[in-house]
Image (tube, rainbow, N blue to C red):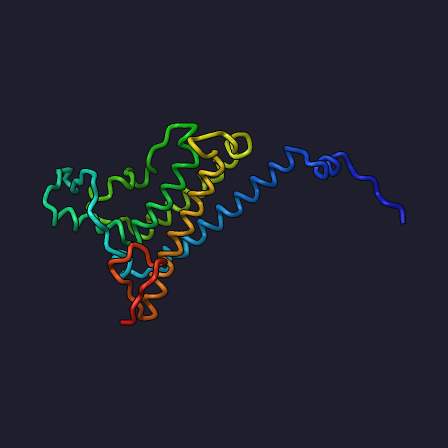
Length: 215
């Protein structure tokens, strides 16, 4: 049987044509990014009302200034401790993980601002009068999907190897994607294990670190 001659495009791919291989790389990153966002979206959707503001772990004190919903500086230790507990709840864990990824997609190449749907950064968490709802967080997931598509198209091919501190742009973005997967897994475990009658030891900073007890 006579073998068909390879086309110029096929020869380029088999020889390791940079453009073709880079496109495969970007496609792979995009697929994994979408998968990570799918995990967080599912965890958010499946988190019941009674757990949306439940503490997954106890949050220790913070060294930064803490302000309340009126913008006032909080100096009372007990009030500070109460305010920062939101940082260990599913709604904030989702916000934190999504914003870290979303910001790192573009912040090294263009100005970044918090999503207009929130108008605030996660650093302003104690100034909120109420946590974001699941509906709001799911809308933010949708926005993050748009930003992923934009960054992959604008930056990932040509700037993947750009040094940013000790890492490249690609390494930083992939690291934040893995960070999103980690937090999505924590929320998922909290939801599923609580439904199964397991509760976390409040002294543990992450449910993936162990020590869960039967109710």
